[in-house]
Amino acid sequence: MDLQKMVPPYRIKVVEPIPFLTTEERRRALTEAGYNPFNLRADQITIDLLSDSGTGATSSAQEAAAALGDESYAGARSWFRFRDEVHDLTGYSHILPVHQGRAGERILFTSLLKPGQICISNTHFDTTHANVKLVGAEPRDLPCPAAADLDSPDPFKGNIDLDALEGILTGPEGHRVGLVLMTITNNGLGAQPVSMANLTAVRDLCRRHGVPFFLDGARFAENAWLVSQRESAYRDWTPRQVATAAFQLADGCVVSLKKDGLSAIGGFIGLRDDALHAACEANLIATEGFSTYGGLAGHDLERLAQGLREVVDPAYLRARAASTARLARLINDAGVDTIQPAGIHALYLNAGRLLPHLSPHEFPGHSLGCQLYLDGGIRCAELGSLYLGSMDDQHRLVTPAPFELVRLAIPRRVYTDTHFEYVAAVLADIAKDPERVRGYRIVSSPHLLRHFKVRLAPVEATGTAKSQGVRFTAVGNGKG
Ligand code: F0G
Image (cartoon, rainbow, N blue to C red; front, side, top):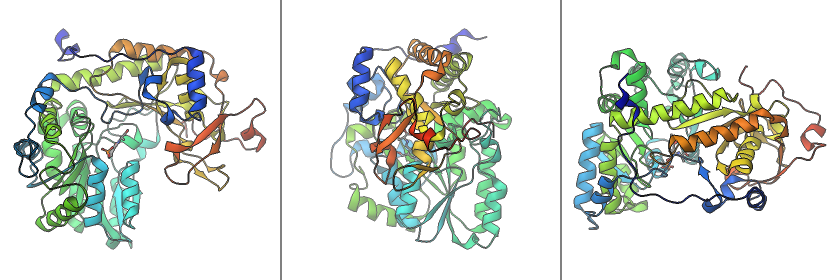
C-alpha cells in the first residue's frame, strides 16, 4: 500500500476552540432548546455534525485569493475568475451566480416549470422539493429499488429507477413532465452516488421525450470520486474529468457551492439555452443581485474559484472518503448500523434498528440524536418520522417515515480522526444499553418545515405513544 495515500494533503494552520460542557449543562441546554438541536447555540456543542453545508474549513490559498476580492458592483475581476473556473469545470455557456443553492432552485424553477407540471428526481432535497411546490408543480421521487435496502452494498444506490422514469415519460402523465433533476450525490438517500451509466440513460430518455435534464450538483466532486472508485469504465479518469463529463450530459445544473465549493456561501446556475438564461437572469437581477455577483461579495467569488480547484484534488477526495469510511467502520464495530455502503459527506445511523423499544411515535431517530447530545455534546439531524412522517392537527404521527435514521454530516477539513473516534465511542456507549434512550413527544410544532422549529419533551416511563396502543415494530428497522 502507498502509505502517502492515507494522509490528507494539508496541515492545519488556524484552529477554533470547541466547547466542552458538563453533563448537567448539556441537559439544561437541551431542555431550554425544547429538545430540538436546531435551537442549540453553537457554543453549547462539542462536535457539530448537523450539516456539511457552509461548515468546511477554507485553505490559505482561498484566504489569499479573498484578499484580492474585487467589490465593483458590475463586471468585477472576481466575477470573471469565478465564471471562467465554473465554465472550465462544467462546460455550460451561461453561468449565473447565486448566494446559495436554494436561490438557484427558486430562480430556475420559476423560469422553467409551469403549475401542474411534474419534476422527477432520484430524490429531491427538502428545499428543492419545497421550491418545486412553490411554483405549483409536483415533485416526484423515483429512487432505484436497491435504495430501499439499507444494508445492501450496491455501489450506486443513488441512481434513479430508469424503468419507472420511462414508464412515466411514455405513459398518460408524460406530457406533464417539465423537468428531470438528478441529485448527485443523493443526500436524501444516504449520500449514495449516481453512476455515469444511470446519468447517461437519463439523458437519453429525456432527449427522446424532449424533457429538460438538469443536475443538482451540490456534491458533484464527491459523486465523481465515487464513480472513479466504483464504476469500472471510469477507473482511469480524474475526479475532475468525471465531474465535467457528468455536467456535459445535462442541459444545465443548479449547484449549492456551500458543499463542494469549499466555502461558507455561494452557488450557481449553469445553462445552455439562451432563452432560459435570459429569463433566469432577469429574475436573478430582480431578486438576488446583478448577474456578475448574484448576492455574493467579490471575496466570496474568489474563495469559490479557488475552492473549486481544490475540491477535485484526488488526494483530498481520497482522504475525505477514507475518513468517513473509517468512522463508519468504528460505528458499525460498536454495533450501530449505518446505510451501506458508506458515502462521503454523511453517515446515516439506523436508529430504528438500534432502538426497537421505541415506536415511530416516540421518534427513535430524534431520540438517538438527543442522546448523542446529552452524552457527548454531538449535534446531528434526524431523518425519520419527525422530519418525514405525516401528522394530524394534534401533531400526532399518522404515517411514519419508511426508516428511522440519524444523519451525521461531516464538515470538510474540520474534524480529525480523533474527533471521530470520540463520536464512535459515545455511540458505542449508547449501543451497550440502548434501552436507556427515552422517546419524545411533540409539544408544539409549526405546520411548515416542522423539524426546524418543533419543540418536544421526553416521553415518561408510562409512554404517551404506547398509550395510543399502536406499535410499528416492523417499520424503521430497514429489514423491510
Ligand atoms: N441540494 C442538495 C442536494 C442539498 O443537500 C442542499 C442543501 C441544497 C440543494 C440547498 O442548498 O443550502 O445552499 O441552499 N443541503 C444542506 C444539508 C442544507 O445540510 O444537507 P443551499
